[in-house]
Every structure is written in C-alpha cells, then in structure tokens.
Image 1 (cartoon, each protein chain N blue to C red):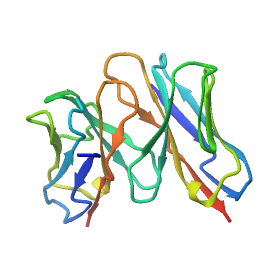
Image 2 (image 1 turned 90 degrees about the vertical axis):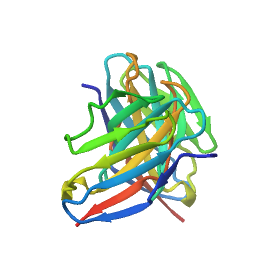
Image 3 (image 1 turned 60 degrees about the vertical axis):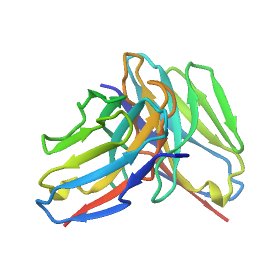
Length: 113
Length: 111
C-alpha cells in the first residue's frame, strides 16, 4: 500500500486480557520497527525485523511482549496479560534499508482498564 | 548509552515570529540525525536527515542544521499550520541500530 497501515486504531483491554496489534508495512520495505509512545514522550524502541528475522528485541519491556513477522511482510505485536502500564500508543515503522528515515503508521492507542 | 535531549519542551509563537528548537545528543558515533513532525493522533512524519557537522537542509519554512553535539530546527515566519510536536532522533553507526528519539518540542503558533 501507499503507507504503513496499523490496526486497530484504538483498543481498550481489561487488565489481564491478551491483545494483538497488526502492522502492514509499505510493500517491499525490508526493515520493520515497533515503538511504544507514552503520552507526552518520544517513541521508545521495542523491536526490529529485517524481513522475517527478528534481529533486535532488546526494547521489549517484559516477556509478556512478543512480536512476529512470519512471512517478512505483515507483523503482529502481542501483549499477554495486559497491565495498566502497557497503556500507550504503539507505532510501527518500515524502511527499505537499515538506515535512513522511517515511515511510520498512525499507531494503535491501547488503553488498559 | 545514546541520549537525545530536546528543548524547550513547549514553545508558543505568534504567527511570523521566527525561532529555533534545539536537539542535543550523545551517541557513540553518528550515522544520522533525523527530524520528524508529529501531529496529534498521527505517527511521526519524516522531515530531514543530517549526516555530518556543518550540513544544512531546508524545507519551506524549516531549516535544520547540525554540529558535533547538537542540531537546530529553525522555523522562519511560522504559520498556525506549523503547530505540531517536533521530534529529533539519532542513529549510531553500528549494525542495524534503531533510532533513539528525544521527547520532542510541542510547538504552538498563534494567529
């Protein structure tokens, strides 16, 4: 597609519920990144894929967070047993190479109640 | 650890009142410094990449400059539609290092 598409745009989850957030990158973009953005803060890195390989997951805050990109295109970020501190906007970005400007999606706003 | 500090946190300007936003960075080598614009409810939108000290880039009313320790985003004669949060990010040169972002400067331009 023309841009990075993320779904859902908004998600409200009860504490303890599992959620799955989807990212459709720009076609042909090799690199895909997930970031977490708390209110009033800058994006913080979670994880990075090059094609289907997850090359860096150092930013995932706990083992409740899991990401996959099985065919090197669409990616899913899964959060198990959600907690209130997981409430944030989750941004996905893609780029055709490992350096240079990323193209971001509009994000998924997750609210855990 | 790579760090990016942006100042001020918030800036309020009258339409036509030029100013600058600051981005100070600490990184073990610099592959690139990036400026993004973020509107409420949207993802960051890429503006510029700067690679070496002394480099400058311009787009409409915006000009970005880079030194060895900081970058400035100069806004000349701003308009209300320039109101947004401006984010600065750095990328270290080694491997597939992801961008490290600052907290941003929230700019409001009043007509």
